[in-house]
Length: 111
Figure 1 (cartoon, helix red, strand yellow):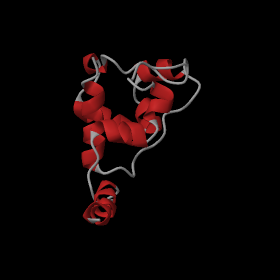
Figure 2 (cartoon, helix red, strand yellow):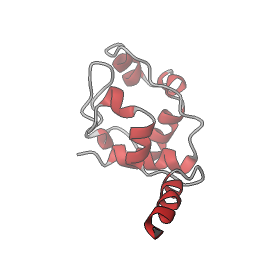
Figure 3 (tube, helix red, strand yellow):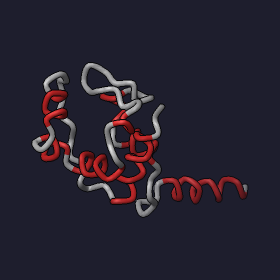
Figure 4 (spheres, helix red, strand yellow):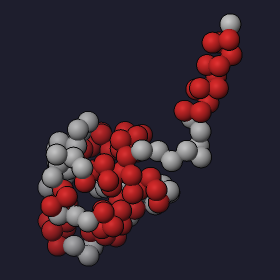
C-alpha cells in the first residue's frame, strides 16, 4: 500500500515545472526529433546535427536556438542552408537559459 502512496509523488516530481530539463529532454519535448530525427541525423525537413561542433560555439548555438529566424539573417551559410529545408526553425525564446545551454551542449556532443 505504501508504494501506491509514493507513486503520485514520484510522478509529480517528474513533472515539476521548476526543474531544469536536460539537453536530451529538451530536444525530445520541444519536438526537435520531429525534424532533426531521434539521433540528430537530419531529415528532409531539417539538417543533420551530428558534428556541428565544427561549426558552432556553445554561445552561438544558444543564440541561434533562441531565435533562429533573426540569427539566420546575419549568417550567409545559414541563409543558404535554409533554402534546402521545408520548415523554418521555430523560436525557443521561452526556454530558460539553462535549458537552452543544455540542449546546445547535447547537440554539440552528437558524434
